[in-house]
Length: 156
Ligand code: FES
View 1 (cartoon, rainbow, N blue to C red):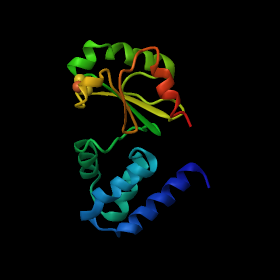
View 2: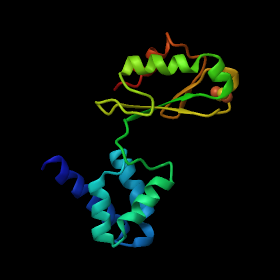
View 3: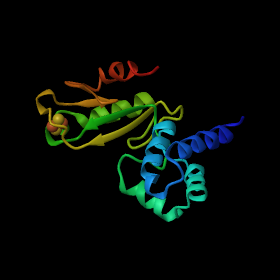
Protein backbone atom coordinates (compact mmCIF):
# COMPACT_ATOMS: atom_id res chain seq x y z
CA UNK A 1 0.00 0.00 0.00
CA UNK A 2 1.27 3.49 -0.79
CA UNK A 3 1.17 6.33 1.76
CA UNK A 4 -2.11 7.74 0.48
CA UNK A 5 -3.78 4.31 0.62
CA UNK A 6 -2.54 3.85 4.20
CA UNK A 7 -3.84 7.29 5.13
CA UNK A 8 -7.23 6.56 3.52
CA UNK A 9 -7.44 3.28 5.42
CA UNK A 10 -6.59 4.92 8.75
CA UNK A 11 -9.09 7.73 8.22
CA UNK A 12 -11.73 5.11 7.36
CA UNK A 13 -10.95 3.35 10.64
CA UNK A 14 -11.39 6.63 12.54
CA UNK A 15 -14.71 7.37 10.81
CA UNK A 16 -15.91 3.83 11.63
CA UNK A 17 -14.81 4.25 15.25
CA UNK A 18 -17.19 7.20 15.68
CA UNK A 19 -19.77 6.20 13.12
CA UNK A 20 -20.55 8.53 10.20
CA UNK A 21 -22.21 11.04 12.52
CA UNK A 22 -21.83 14.73 11.61
CA UNK A 23 -22.07 15.81 15.26
CA UNK A 24 -18.94 13.77 16.04
CA UNK A 25 -16.62 15.32 13.44
CA UNK A 26 -14.59 17.16 16.10
CA UNK A 27 -13.79 13.81 17.73
CA UNK A 28 -12.80 12.44 14.32
CA UNK A 29 -10.60 15.46 13.63
CA UNK A 30 -8.89 15.01 17.01
CA UNK A 31 -8.09 11.39 16.16
CA UNK A 32 -6.80 12.37 12.72
CA UNK A 33 -4.66 15.15 14.24
CA UNK A 34 -3.23 12.61 16.74
CA UNK A 35 -2.58 10.02 14.03
CA UNK A 36 -0.96 12.28 11.42
CA UNK A 37 0.11 15.29 13.57
CA UNK A 38 -2.01 17.47 11.29
CA UNK A 39 -5.19 17.36 9.23
CA UNK A 40 -4.28 16.26 5.70
CA UNK A 41 -6.47 17.74 2.93
CA UNK A 42 -7.32 14.24 1.69
CA UNK A 43 -8.57 13.25 5.14
CA UNK A 44 -10.86 16.29 5.27
CA UNK A 45 -12.21 15.43 1.82
CA UNK A 46 -12.81 11.85 2.96
CA UNK A 47 -14.78 12.99 6.02
CA UNK A 48 -16.69 15.41 3.83
CA UNK A 49 -17.73 12.58 1.47
CA UNK A 50 -18.39 9.84 3.99
CA UNK A 51 -19.88 11.75 6.90
CA UNK A 52 -21.76 14.32 4.85
CA UNK A 53 -20.24 17.44 6.41
CA UNK A 54 -19.43 20.45 4.24
CA UNK A 55 -15.74 21.01 3.61
CA UNK A 56 -16.13 24.67 4.64
CA UNK A 57 -17.43 23.49 8.03
CA UNK A 58 -14.40 21.24 8.53
CA UNK A 59 -12.00 24.08 7.63
CA UNK A 60 -13.88 26.38 9.99
CA UNK A 61 -13.40 23.89 12.85
CA UNK A 62 -9.79 23.22 11.87
CA UNK A 63 -8.87 26.90 11.95
CA UNK A 64 -10.95 27.78 15.02
CA UNK A 65 -9.30 25.36 17.45
CA UNK A 66 -5.59 25.65 18.25
CA UNK A 67 -5.40 21.89 18.70
CA UNK A 68 -5.70 21.44 14.93
CA UNK A 69 -3.10 22.13 12.29
CA UNK A 70 -3.59 22.14 8.53
CA UNK A 71 0.15 21.80 7.90
CA UNK A 72 2.33 18.87 8.97
CA UNK A 73 3.74 19.13 12.48
CA UNK A 74 6.78 17.47 13.92
CA UNK A 75 6.85 14.44 16.18
CA UNK A 76 8.24 16.75 18.90
CA UNK A 77 6.87 20.20 19.72
CA UNK A 78 9.36 22.83 20.86
CA UNK A 79 7.96 25.99 22.40
CA UNK A 80 10.15 28.90 23.48
CA UNK A 81 8.54 31.24 25.99
CA UNK A 82 8.58 34.85 24.78
CA UNK A 83 6.99 36.42 27.83
CA UNK A 84 8.70 39.59 29.03
CA UNK A 85 11.12 38.00 31.57
CA UNK A 86 12.13 35.20 29.17
CA UNK A 87 12.48 37.71 26.34
CA UNK A 88 14.67 39.97 28.50
CA UNK A 89 16.86 37.03 29.48
CA UNK A 90 17.60 35.95 25.91
CA UNK A 91 14.66 33.98 24.49
CA UNK A 92 15.09 35.54 20.99
CA UNK A 93 18.71 34.31 20.91
CA UNK A 94 17.53 30.85 22.00
CA UNK A 95 15.04 30.77 19.12
CA UNK A 96 17.84 31.75 16.72
CA UNK A 97 20.07 29.00 18.14
CA UNK A 98 17.33 26.39 17.67
CA UNK A 99 16.63 27.66 14.15
CA UNK A 100 20.32 27.23 13.30
CA UNK A 101 20.60 23.84 15.06
CA UNK A 102 17.52 22.31 13.41
CA UNK A 103 17.59 24.34 10.17
CA UNK A 104 14.00 25.41 10.63
CA UNK A 105 12.29 28.78 10.91
CA UNK A 106 10.19 29.61 13.93
CA UNK A 107 6.63 28.47 13.25
CA UNK A 108 7.85 25.73 10.95
CA UNK A 109 8.58 22.02 11.00
CA UNK A 110 11.84 20.32 10.12
CA UNK A 111 11.98 18.48 6.80
CA UNK A 112 12.25 15.13 8.57
CA UNK A 113 9.06 15.99 10.51
CA UNK A 114 10.83 15.50 13.83
CA UNK A 115 10.43 18.98 15.30
CA UNK A 116 8.04 21.90 15.14
CA UNK A 117 9.35 25.16 16.59
CA UNK A 118 6.98 27.74 18.06
CA UNK A 119 6.89 30.52 20.63
CA UNK A 120 4.37 31.30 23.34
CA UNK A 121 3.46 33.92 25.90
CA UNK A 122 4.43 33.54 29.55
CA UNK A 123 3.99 29.98 30.78
CA UNK A 124 4.04 30.99 34.42
CA UNK A 125 7.46 29.87 35.60
CA UNK A 126 9.36 33.12 35.17
CA UNK A 127 11.68 32.26 38.07
CA UNK A 128 13.36 29.74 35.77
CA UNK A 129 13.52 32.04 32.72
CA UNK A 130 14.35 31.59 29.96
CA UNK A 131 12.05 28.62 29.40
CA UNK A 132 11.86 26.08 26.59
CA UNK A 133 9.12 23.45 26.61
CA UNK A 134 9.56 20.27 24.59
CA UNK A 135 6.60 17.88 24.36
CA UNK A 136 5.15 19.45 27.47
CA UNK A 137 8.38 19.07 29.51
CA UNK A 138 9.67 22.33 30.89
CA UNK A 139 13.36 23.22 30.70
CA UNK A 140 14.51 26.28 32.63
CA UNK A 141 17.62 28.48 32.60
CA UNK A 142 18.21 27.55 28.97
CA UNK A 143 20.95 29.34 27.06
CA UNK A 144 21.74 29.61 23.33
CA UNK A 145 24.73 27.35 24.05
CA UNK A 146 23.02 24.55 25.96
CA UNK A 147 19.71 24.53 24.08
CA UNK A 148 21.00 22.11 21.43
CA UNK A 149 21.73 19.53 24.14
CA UNK A 150 18.18 19.94 25.43
CA UNK A 151 16.74 19.43 21.93
CA UNK A 152 19.00 16.50 21.09
CA UNK A 153 17.49 14.50 23.96
CA UNK A 154 14.35 14.26 21.85
CA UNK A 155 15.94 13.37 18.53
CA UNK A 156 14.79 9.73 18.56
S1 FES B 1 7.97 34.95 30.76
FE1 FES B 1 8.64 32.94 30.37
S2 FES B 1 7.83 31.86 32.02
FE2 FES B 1 7.06 33.84 32.35
